Length: 87
Image (cartoon, rainbow, N blue to C red; front, side, top):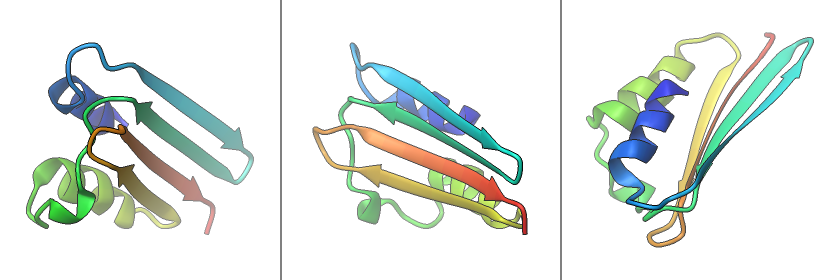
């Protein structure tokens, strides 16, 4: 989540609003960082980009039961969802 929050500060733009949503259950944890900033095309981000590929998707892929999803559109903000479900 910290990388998603850093990305809001770096890329969402001045005046963008951001919210954090956390859902905790006995066998799962889901979190989302949502902003209404500049957004981007996730398909245009190269696989070697550290913030998304390594720090978010890569880290969650290495956790049993972990997952990550990034949704964004230019001019319409970004949502980063990460979660864990007990395997």
